Image (tube, rainbow, N blue to C red):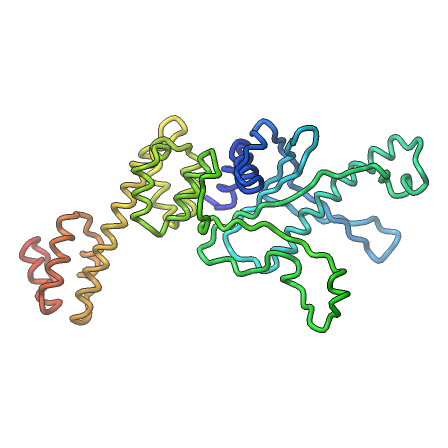
Length: 334
């Protein structure tokens, strides 16, 4: 499955979306619930004039990942989520265009309403389709970055501008634009989240620390019955999609997945692989290792056998001696 599709499907759930708004946008304070969110159009149209005045304006469409119209008391805010795995050094421009496009979409709707009811308008209000007291809903976007590399791109418009030689007074008159990047793998804490966003983010951020993953599975009962789309998110971003998607079918029941069982098996396989790699590394100090021998070692899944071979690899004086010892024990031929 495509990661963008999986992440968008996961956050299409309004309770999770509200969790991101509260956890990231409101410092963990539960201002909104899933019922306060309305799905909004992710398609944005950008106008472009052609040189000939006889031809109509041509519009190009851009699509953002997710957008929700969110109620805050009697007012609303438009809050987007963008899922990002690679570093985009021009991301500030893209997000700025998305947010500006959303403001323009709101303004276009106001213009349509004013055109339908133009009574009592000043000439300027009628001409531009915007009244003195017209207001737009505040708009922002949270970028969820899942990449392993630390984000070293710009986080605001100033980070993309070359100000060399520009007078300070003029520079201060050039508007900046900040974007909000959440580096999931570098979150120091996830206690601000109240849904399974916490379990998903925890597993992704500790995906390279097998001991920490085992502790998560032992300490957090929520992993025992995780929603299928939450399991899919974990599988997509820990780097073992194919293996974990196969395990899902084994432990899936009624739209839930016993993640503990599936992931414990995956961690056990990872541990076996690490042990096999350690054997190969030890033997390589004695000289070249045949592909046949390497294949036998890497395919072995018995924990006791690998433990025995690891001790043996540390005691023998050559690759040939190791081959002879395991051939005697398991009737291998080289």
